[in-house]
Length: 271
Length: 254
Image (cartoon, rainbow over all chains, first blue to last red; front, side, top):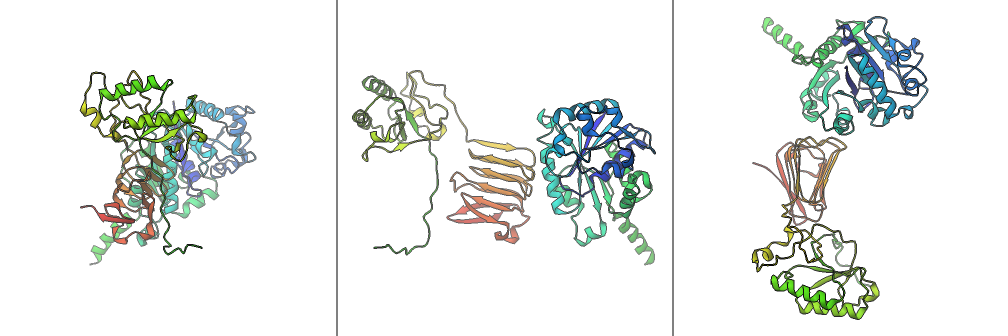
């Protein structure tokens, strides 16, 4: 029985899709069987980031409406053979997602995969609530700025009330993934500091992904950043996040701390 | 002709709800009054200081009979403050006013049969809840504490804790965009970044306590302050907030 993860945020453009692809690819590279599911019906993007946009035949809505079998809609990644994509439909809208249909698809995926990662659309409407509904674990993607933090707080509230786990009286496991973190700007006070975000949201930190052009470059070539260049800073941060997701107790390094640490050493040497 | 308004200040009108004892008389009144006398004999002062509402819904009586019943009750020192379920034609200017929209609550226990139980009658009225038809078989006593709720998780943005019955204690934070509405005081063991409205049912003695004040809005009994109006030196501090007259006061907690 696999684990169902929802990658969610409330606010758009914070890096849900990028993170879904990067985490999915990182987990699959470790040998686990992974499927990433695009719930953003009507505004799909995950296929692009995964580099599978030319291979989409059937999609999530087709499967839900019985027009295609799940195996027909799943797209296997060409680079990592244990990584699959279930794309969203671009021509339909989110009303085509039914609670019963989503439940059936998720149940089937859970049986076949170790990890089912659902890429939630922005907002708090139907698409987002259905994406989180059957999750065992939630990854809340947040940028270090006030509007993103408040939207994430709202999403955490929904995770604690509108999901199947919450309705059964269980507690949803939630992790914070802080993306687009710019140490220099945080230092200048242009961005919220890590501690401030953690204090407001009060959920455990899964990782901090530094702001980097590597992320954009990877998206443009259609590869998850953890596949495109597995040595760059954001990829390393995603690999560490995956280790924490699997239960490893790994301290989180705040980007920029290392630099200042080195700065101290250099400062000392120069003196 | 026209009165000159020397005072531009408007009169404050507020809603307030009280507990009242609802009496439902039965026909014939003579028999019912005997039973009432019996009850009063068992417990002197049962009706003393208790506001009484007379519920005559469904009774086939005319104006004279109702008037007679009220005067009979007056003679027994049962002061009727209002009449529920009567046609307006039955009520004159010299009669208690009509009352509507009463909400039933738990029954008030009639004094026990053997009792000259003084403790019972001197019990503060607020302890029993309202509106009880005095029945031959007294209902089970329900000792009720002051209502309060405890919330043990953070109140997230978009969530709302609504408890007009009494106090709210929150162990955790109240996020920006979240709100807490309480009839009594609000205690927050964590940062307050959202809005808190205490004493909303007209309770000016309600207070707001928090570990860290970063609120968007605070209000007690309808008087409010936004973040802009709050003293900047209190921001981020552990603070209590109360109402003095019509002014919201705040001070740090030691």
